[in-house]
Length: 329
Image (cartoon, rainbow, N blue to C red; front, top):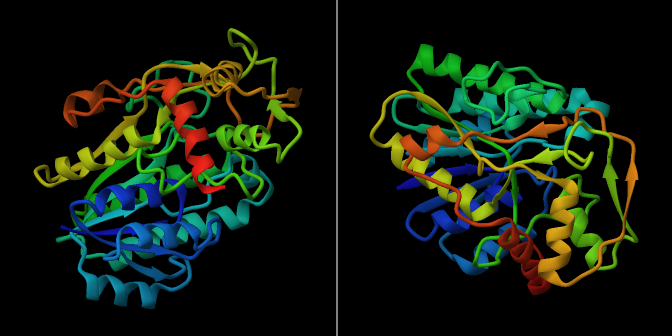
């Protein structure tokens, strides 16, 4: 099968490429706006048949159309996009231009009759939902520019599915962490990361003196935000299941990819310390704009229809995150 992957140099996109290349032909696309060539080089080292093209999807539609026309992908997995909630609040124009135009250009480049689309969406489209855990039919609202761009992209894809018969799946991620068992790709901890796990790793490595916890006054068990952390390997298996589902179902569908369990920031820190036998210094700071108190999935629909389930524990997430970094430093 021929699979085209946007955002192939990223943490999730790169990990997906490594897994997909075991059985399929893969073309990766990226412009390195929030990544580097390192992951592409690592994938090439492990899989010599990996094909890669550097391209800015938001601004190079003619080149994109040529690539798609030449490659003729059967499956397009669309990961690319800027993704930091806090950054999106300070630079909304960049997020709207990059995220929306890249998706619009992609939709106008692929053959809707022959290519099937798997879209990397986000739990941020649920905003501050009072109903927890969250089902796919929960009312959609956003509290950040990043979340708004994801919701807008979902609307675009829905319209193309309705008007052009684009066969699509929207996968709403919760919080991927950890590293694939091959330890080829790790979540970037070098460039001022926004996500919790790479910031934990930086403190563990001595790169930062302490970890800032943004908010300890949320209405949660310990005052810190609660999230649904899912192992990256389980997330990637969800994509494989979605591809298999798309091969036999002609429709548009939406699935949560999460564990169904909520874990607070403090609980994740304590697990990381215990599993890896390492001390993490931390202190509290003000809440970040756009963050919500609680967000975790009801994954029953994906469990039932995709025949998929998250299996790996929080302890495994913490151990794999740390072990993978040890391999590459």
